[in-house]
Image 1 (tube, helix red, strand yellow):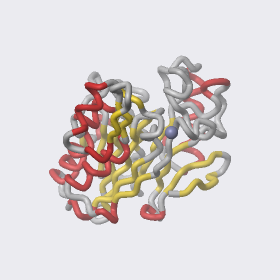
Image 2 (cartoon, rainbow, N blue to C red; image 1 turned 120 degrees about the vertical axis):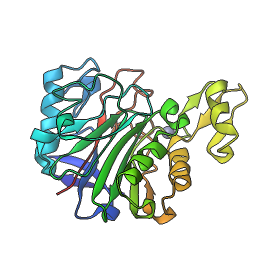
Image 3 (cartoon, rainbow, N blue to C red; image 1 turned 120 degrees about the horizontal axis):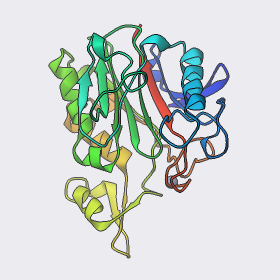
Image 4 (cartoon, helix red, strand yellow; image 1 turned 180 degrees about the horizontal axis):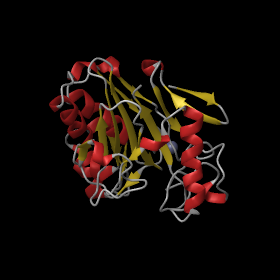
Length: 260
Ligand SMILES: [Zn+2]
């Protein structure tokens, strides 16, 4: 993946999705200030919601996305993934889901979807044969519950071949900075021993992006169709929002994708 200029903002994009409108946002080019500066996309983070809404609009305008049909996740660390119906359009933004929906999948054209995060793992999915996209949020809970496999299952149930699906794992906190308590670390130890590191204080360092990549492989994606950004939001906090590095006061970055 590489960071490119997109009008007045910068986005992280992949060559694998060339020709598809997509990207993970950085912190620049928005109207928010301070800890939320400047492109916070979170409506419930303590930032002025009108500024966050304006930032979302800046993203859709610069990326050429159809803002009238933008649909967001509503992230409550569930493993719920929804295949969008027409009545779901706009949910997470101008209408409520009514429950946690941490992943969305659609085959509708001109209907951008977005997942948001600041340390958790945002993943974008794309099947260029069946023409279907997904946007998924995975923190440690969602990753433990394997929400990414659930998203792949929903895509397969709706006609995708797993070997055609491409996955982009966006910026998230890395094993260098993601320390968790013993019980959280142990939840991943047995299955992904190379993705966790036990520390002398009995805490663990965890590679959530690496685990997500493993889970995508287990779910039937080809190795060459999985791209890991390998960006640590805490190490690169100047460019990306990080909940941990900013001690809980941070904005949110977004992962957007749209079919045309
Ligand atoms: Zn780091």
